[in-house]
Length: 495
Ligand SMILES: Nc1nc2c(ncn2[C@@H]2O[C@H](COP(=O)(O)OP(=O)(O)OP(=O)(O)O)[C@@H](O)[C@H]2O)c(=O)[nH]1
Image 1: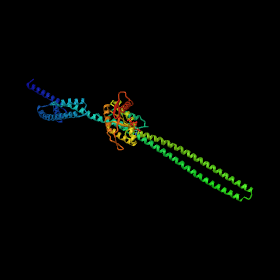
Image 2 (image 1 turned 45 degrees about the horizontal axis):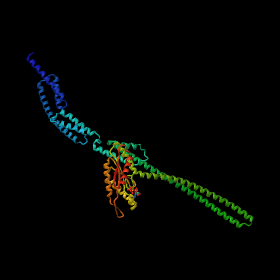
Image 3 (image 1 turned 30 degrees about the horizontal axis):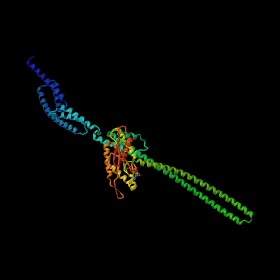
Image 4 (image 1 turned 90 degrees about the horizontal axis):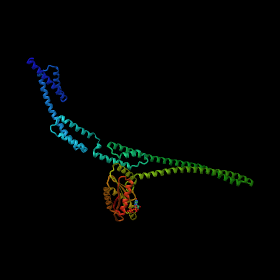
């Protein structure tokens, strides 16, 4: 082989290697830029034609070089921007309060890696995708997951339960109500809470509707009964008028018969004639009297029957009214508010205690009950009168409510006795709150009949311990109250 031939062979093999290299480069950068893609495909087309001269390739190479240079700058700029954004995103994530500590640790590690200088595109991409997935998790996770919102939802849930405990659902099929109350004792997210609120609203509306319907039914039956009594009365009046007409006709007849008898007596000329005339007239008078008597009797019977029917109808109305009255007073009782002090009453306390007991069983947060009683209240009543006593009750009830927290439940249990439930409260805190209330009651400047009086209260408090029932804790608090009274009043004792 001549040296020329050998050179040609080398030359074409070099071009082949070069073209192969360009092909491989082309496929590895394919998609980065249209311009590069189109130039490389032209080089590829030329190489596939088999007649490539290096002179033909030169301008293509230099233009590819220029485009690559431009691309390099663009990529560097993009990488630097991505780097900046990635850094900012990690900082933002670290500032996010909702992030768990494990997640924060992950972000810190990411930030550390991003902080490294001169990261390449390929190094930066997986870091970016990690940041994006963290951000995505934050965005797509339910809002309720944030601590602040969870606390807010908890509070709302608590309030919905309390509302349900204060509404009277008597007579309502209670399975759905019980299920709802139970549901509200478990942790809920925002959507579930909204559903529960809707359900509570439906139950309350249904209760109101039932109540309205039953009241309406009562009013309808009352008006029905009054209507039938009215009809019976007018019928009786009508009969009475008819009877009175017949009676007056008979009286007229009797009068004319007596008149005729007197005429006959006067015109009679002999005894025989007189006897006959008198007999005939007396017979017809007797018939008229019998008729009159029968008429009177029939009317009396009819009147009696009418009266009996009216009486039974009235008795029906009376018993219905009584039943409704009882229901209304029950309603008032179940209204759950004491009318004198406007505090919740004993029924409200029972409901609330049940609810707090269930919560205590579910969450085991501390729970206390206190019983407070006005000292020597009888003396106030006896010395200054019942009205002064009532006023005292109102003022002290107000002060108790004001001295305790919004979340504490204070009710008038009866007479001059108040019961307080302290949810999520330890015995120490409950004691502290009761002491504060006791001091504030003591400092109320009562003035009766020009006399300045200070009134005190005593209280007993106890907290729920394992296996305690509400009645056991209440009993202990009550015993503690007696200890306070025995020890000289104006104090708080615990048991
Ligand atoms: N004015 C008024 N008095 C009431 C009411 N309810 C209960 N009382 C009175 O409260 C008094 C309670 O008297 P006691 O049970 O002897 O107790 P106390 O005098 O407070 O004595 P201690 O409890 O031992 O300190 C009685 O006189 C009741 O008539 C009410 O609604 N209004």
